[in-house]
Image 1: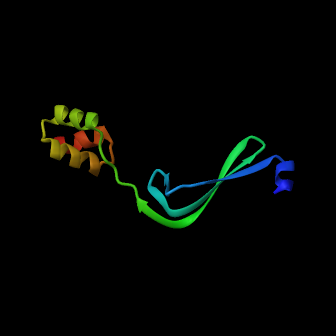
Image 2 (image 1 turned 90 degrees about the vertical axis):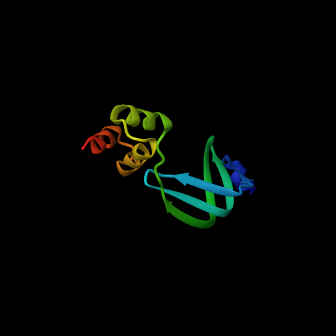
Image 3 (image 1 turned 120 degrees about the vertical axis):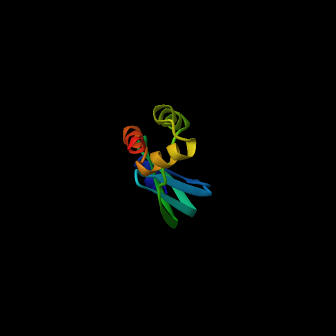
Length: 100
């Protein structure tokens, strides 16, 4: 431990209940984590161990996007939500798919 301090390295245990990492296509959830924050010369890094669960990220449309699709197409809110989900949030594609 003293050697670490001489080299400017400090560490601190973080009492976390869960760690969530959000990626573009998925989420990584780490349950029962052991989290250590390590500071090396002013830069923080984290060491995380625990039970890993991966799940595909699901898209949920924003209210403003739903309103735009409803206004542009005249469809119900439910159809607008479905179109946005089917087109992964792409407004133009959702509107075009409903106008066909």
